Length: 421
Image (cartoon, rainbow, N blue to C red; front, side, top):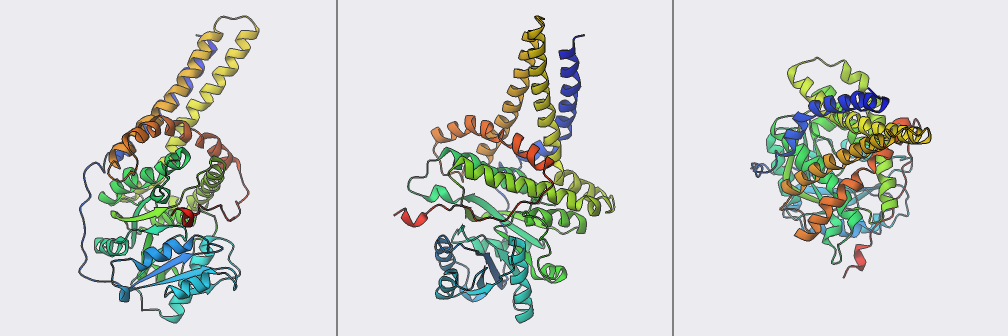
């Protein structure tokens, strides 16, 4: 048995075992093919809408306009922005729109802004609000967003999440392959992820925009304690597992999220996010390991760590590719004809990685077919391009796993929607 076949058998076996372990998650991909049961709520809860808005005055106008257009009765919600500087133009924009601003000069991350705002509200009016809803400043809300989020509270869960869609597709000239490919991540997280988890009472992947916490949870937490990484939402997800906090996802509450149209900016965002995901995993590994191993907790742990199975699967195939390429080079130098087989095995691994992401992309396009604002031809392009785009995560994840230094909270370039007239 040659060295190339030994490599193939060892790493191929690891990949096969990882794929078997991932089967329950693959089944969940198809949990959103049929429409979700629509909840209604006879109670109109008082909602505090919190908007972290450090240096976001150029983009927050579209969000404020969408808040004004909400069908939910205005007497049942208020909105608050959190800025860093006293001269931030967002303060006047917020005031003119009927909201209130808080200035938190010491904020170093989004979690700081959220914590400052929640603690300020609790100190001033501790019992006024029934829920606290977080939305990023660059988002746009569907007119029924607050109505559907309030309906989600009828689930009994302490955390309710809406469905993320792509704000860029609201532009007149919306065609952008980077945006289209990166936007698939929201379908992966929500429609082929959180939808199945929500239907089966499994802890969802919490995302920091379009997410609402019941007031009793905020009071028990004493504000927003998730401030040790740049992925405060992933910290929350792990804490939900550790503390058995129930989450609910509603596909009827639509919030439109802005995506960067340039690959470099997108990769920068992806790197920061994945580094935060890895940091959060390290942070909560001990608390989660100590929880009682009930059936429900074990299921939650599995789905929370399912991404690590993907790391193992893709990682083993990727290492196999590199090992076979190295073997092909060495064999070629010494004149061994087995170099061709080594190169063929390397190519086979890359094809398998591509096909894996291709099948996932197809599941996304099928399950979210009614919400994707692109024509059939565009969907076909995304179907074949997205797997290549998603393979870009391989190097990003390697960097995140190796990086021990926290990422900085930096301002990102925004799309100028005001020019789309």
